[in-house]
Length: 386
Image (cartoon, rainbow, N blue to C red; front, side, top):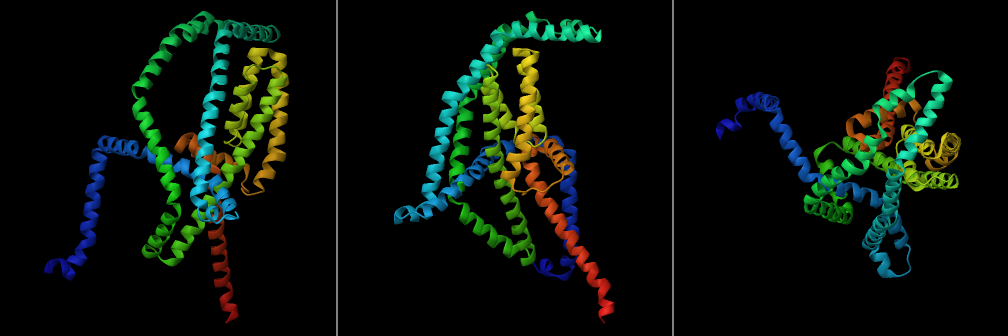
């Protein structure tokens, strides 16, 4: 014990810690596969809670709005229990939304897929006729090359015969793990409720912990930029959801007027892809135009191209600026770079989260640059002032 309190031990302690860190890093590098398997196991354990956090974060947006509304109520009970009542209301609405999707939207999607499979031969013939006309004008043999690679009979067998076997295998494989899936979904749902209920107490405890661990200036900066990031995420999710609903509805109506049997499915796809700036709308429009051209002919496909491009321009130049209100003043180059990096790191979630994160990073860099500029100006002017 005397040695532990001696000055020699205090001098040796940093070297001992460095040796331990080197040993740990060496073991991790040598047993990287084992470490990776442990990390994957740990991620599988906490994954339901991660989904619960995401659900709680998303539902907290309408929950906060309802909490303010209940706080203005004339009845004292409602005002006192505003947090609990807002959470209860939001989750009831969420359950009703899930039931609506299961009972109305999913059957429509299933019917559209079944209709596509049943009419695949007609769509294939239409597409090949269009390609043959292109060959006639361009003097190419594109239709022959495609016909060699894609045999309609084989594709129909895959969709109707072998595809059914494959679907059954996937279905039974899914049913085999249905108990685990239900348990994880229930765990995520339940944890999201507790996260929302304990949000304020956890936030206060985190503030206390940071204030005790790091200097006041650092903790203030951390809460400033995490608050800005939270504000950006909330505003981005809210505006993109509203914008996606508007865009999806307009696209569904337009495609229904043009007689597309897949108007609802394509409209949903366009609305969901709208969460991803630039790339999402382009990819969704290309897929929708391709489906319309194959199923309804080249002329209707061309009309749908013009209509969807006009809708996209209205959305980009009128609807989105009104909703965003200039919140994310990022250049197109920064948006493309952030979406590319976010997609490479975390897939779709990374692409969705890229814009709010990039906006905060840009504000942080701008603040640091302004600080350094002011500091240099102060240093350069101080001799003159003396």
